[in-house]
Structures are given as C-alpha cells and as structure tokens.
Image (cartoon, rainbow, N blue to C red; front, side, top):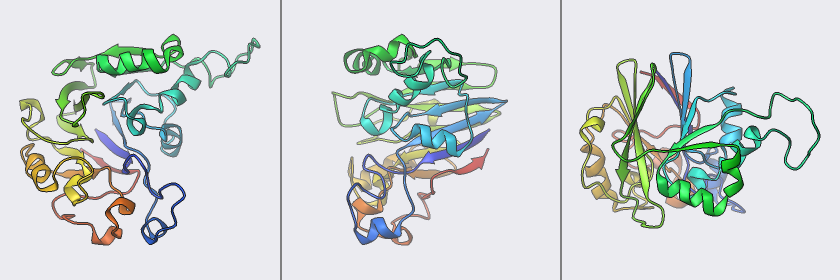
Length: 260
C-alpha cells in the first residue's frame, strides 16, 4: 500500500490569503487536507477539499475508485464541486452534443448521512452526477483490495458531525483523523496502525482541542508513526524548523508519501 499526503495545511492554507507575513513568505505551500491511498491498482482519496483538482493533477491520478468525506467543512468537502465538473456529461451549461473524455466520469463518494443532507441542501445538483453512498460509524466498505471502516470523531461541532477512516490493505493500516477536538475513545480497529494522520493541534496551536490533551489522545492510537495534518506556520507564527514535537509528531510537506 502506498500512501500520499496530498495536503498538509489547515482551512486557511499556506500562504494565507492576502498575507505577507514572514511565516507565509518562508514556508512551502500547504494545501488543504487530502490523502491518496493506492493498493492493488486501486485508488482511494480521503477528504475532498477545494484543492482536489490541483492535488490529483500533481500526482497524475485521473481515475479514483472512491472518495471518502470526513465532514462538510469547506477545507474538507467543498472540492465536491470540482468532482461534479468531471462527472457532468457536458461542460457546465453547454448543451452541445459532443464526446470528450474529461466528462461523464463515474464518481463515488462515501460519507456520513449528515454530509449527504448538507449536499442536498447546499449543492443539490451535484447528486444528479455524483453517486453519494452514506456510511455509518463502525460500518465497513470492503473490496478485494481495501477494507475501509468509518469511526466517529469529536470535532467540537454538532452542525458538522465528523468521522475518520481506517484503511487496511496488503496487511497494513492507515488511520485518518484530521480534525479532532478531543479523544474519548479509540476504536479497536484503529489501535496499532502503521500510520496515523492526526490533527495538527498537537504542534501547539490549539486550532481545535487542547494541545496537551490531543497529544495524549493521539498516543492512545498506539500507531507506529503519527503525521500532523492541519499544519499552519501562519497560524502558529513559527517557521517550519521551529515547530514543536516533530520527533513524535512528524511534519510532512504536501505530496510526501510512504510505502507500507
């Protein structure tokens, strides 16, 4: 299994819009969160942020077997509009009858029922083109190549219920938990993973929950490696080399990858 972190940033991204601070100027670009998982010739993508088109072009992936949505916040889901462009039979409102390979792709998204409800209310036209399949916490999607299991995350908001995913393939497991305000319990199937992507508040910014409490929560997953998501030198007001806890919580660049 090969895992690529296509976006390491937070909701704002680096550089931040209209910002000329020293941290934005000196840091590498950080796109919004997304993870590409490849195994057995199949591909999955976890999270669908507004940078998704750029991210998939960067890794030269043009067919994805399934996308998995964590929740409906802008930085994690609003790239669904980009996928809709690929799923439509014609370009935007052009009614001309012509054949073009960039249109009419089969797009399947798995996610919670609240995210589907949000889509129905906010982007109802998308469901005419994109197949959205609800998946409940603790429910699994199994194929010959992958076992993907959802689990509930405490993201501190009732308006946007959030779930993470544990993906197993080729005797390895990666767990994706990008937005966390607290860790009350860790599902058994998430414990002992080869790789955990976890909320970057562990670096000290407290974008979400208390940093010390989240560090302790991340350790409860007992993963071999923990990589921070939602990283922002802009918000931390620190240069990349000065980020806290990099020995325990790894800080990657966009498109860093590992083979498990």
